[in-house]
Image (cartoon, rainbow, N blue to C red; front, side):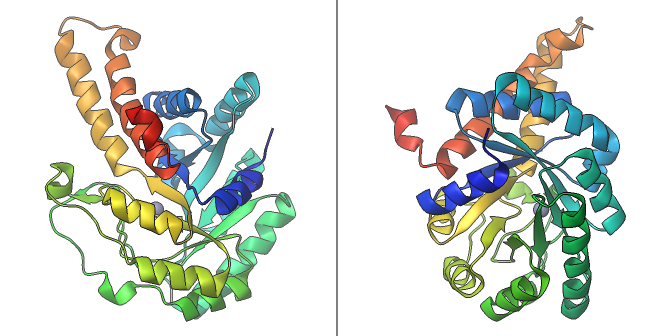
Length: 294
Ligand SMILES: [Zn+2]
């Protein structure tokens, strides 16, 4: 079985991106796992602090480990947006493969100081732990926003990226390159798309020589995704698109069987609805669109 680090290295060589999908219940987890297996592509499952609080940190680690072992399948687990070392240590001890240590709201020097400490502490628990650091401002909340926040002042520069990576020793960097957490209502309706600063991604990759994650991928233009991956993005996070599909799937499942009370008879349309989104994103991130059309 390959490790997440092996899969990351391979993604760098072949210029594809690993799909990272947030989950907070069994419907979402089943959908991500089913899509990955169907396409035979590795998947990274992520849970933020709030999502871990709901599901259980040790419990999700045990569940994902059992899927990986029983099916001999590369499904990995990430502690997304972790804001304190204590929460990071909890995830590391539970057996998570990677941790997104996010102090991007702090001043740059303080972000560097505390992220460096976290890298050392987390790798002391598990030397193969992959630690991601965050710089810049991409907003908060993987949900539907009524208006776009002004993130133009929070864009990351190549020089900041280089400094941060050298000083902290992170394995992965998440920069602000025009991406944004959550979706605008017009994006959910498919009327508008997010656009990325591709030149900035390429310059950051060249300056920092590190794996790069794109957060807040939901609602991004397909062509921008392809260019961003070609420019050096290794992991793409999708959350809000899944949450929208989850809600629609649950509503459809309930509406289709108004007298039904058996969860495993109501929920399959929700699994299928999320699975379709995951599969379509995985195909795009891995250059498999031709296979879809064939
Ligand atoms: Zn994120």
